[in-house]
Length: 246
Ligand SMILES: [Zn+2]
Image (tube, rainbow, N blue to C red):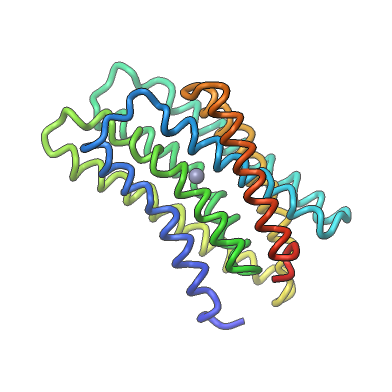
C-alpha cells in the first residue's frame, strides 16, 4: 500500500469534517433556532450511519470482528460522555467561550467518525461517499449551533469560522494519522478489523448522539420519517454495492 492510496480517502474525510464551516457560515444568514431542519437531517444521518455500521458486521460474524465492533462502540461512548460532560457547564459564560466548548465537543465526536469514514473509504469509495454525505448532513446543523452564540459578537463570523475550521481539521488529521499508525499493527492489506471497529463507532454515534439530538429538536413524525428514509437509502446502496464487494 503506497501513500497515494490514502489521498482519496483523506480528501473525503477532510471535506466531510470541514462541512462544519459551511454550517458556521450559514448561521449568520439563516435563522434556524426552531431546529426543524436539524431534526430531519440528524435523523436521516442516524438512519444511514446505523444501517451502514450494522452492515459492517454482517460480512464477517466472527469473534475478532465482533469484539472490535464492541470496542469501537465502547471507546466512542466513553469519548462522547467525557466531551458532553464538559460542554454542560457553559451557560453563564461569553459567546466565544460557549462556542469554544461546543466546538471541542463536536471535535471529540468527529474524531471517531472520521476514523470510521476513512476506514470505510479505504475499502470502498462509494460507501465512503455515502457515509461522508451522512456526516455533512449533520455537520452543517452542528456548525450552525457552534456559531450561534457568536452571532451577536463583533467579528463573530470570522471567529466562528476559525473555531469550526479547527474543530473540523484537527480530528480529521488525527484520524488519518491514527489509521496510518494502527495499520502497521495489522497485516499490510487487512482492512476488515478496521471496518468492524468503524461499525461500532457509527452505531454508537447514531444511537447515543444523533437520534437523541433529533428527538430534542424535531417533531416525532419528522424524526421517524427521516430515520426510516436514511435506513432505506443506505440499505439500497448496500444492496446495489453488493455488501462491500463493489
Ligand atoms: Zn458527525
